[in-house]
Image 1: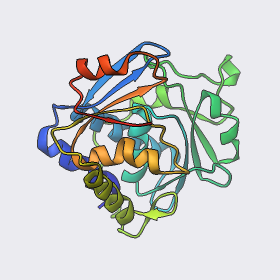
Image 2 (image 1 turned 90 degrees about the vertical axis):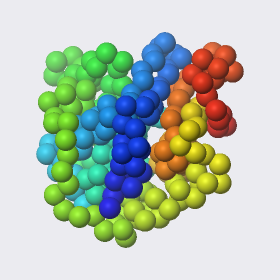
Image 3 (image 1 turned 180 degrees about the vertical axis):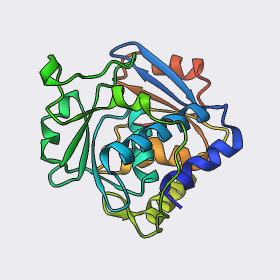
Image 4 (image 1 turned 135 degrees about the vertical axis):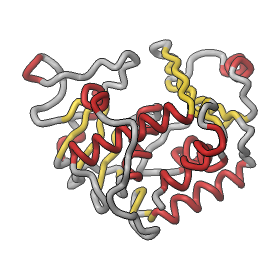
Length: 244
């Protein structure tokens, strides 16, 4: 069982129509709400892209140079569904997933997938066409739309396969479940968080995403927080607020 199977499947089985991730970016005014079913479709599309277009499979290392964002959550779940390992350092990684401001840092990987993180799905574009993506890189926003909404792993992923910065599948799942219990999170919770999700230091990623999934809770994530979070918590019917 992959990390994605262990953490996401119970959420979808319980109530796939319930809001799973509500994402805000106060710098752009963006708000998007994804049900479990919609998020699952994005994970499947991303996993198909990574496997079929980027050759991501068990044993592949994928550097994640992305901010805390709903697309990052989908990308991480997709990496694990493929049986690959999410790492922080792009040097020597097979694939790197990079935002516009981390494309240069991602150059040490074998293949770069560029994420525009644009609210309207606009891609980064290649340098040949006046865009930002280097030659040979994959434009996530453009390519992910062409992928199927269903993903079937080709091979089983063992529990001791590396999944997150050297921690194996079983360790990531157990850590997320243990942290959910420590935080007292439950399936009825709606959690507001502004935490960063650096792969190199997994505390924020575990508290801000994985523990929420492990609990079967709903996440309200705010990037570039600038507005009254107390008022937002009331509007979104938040039951728990996690410190950044």
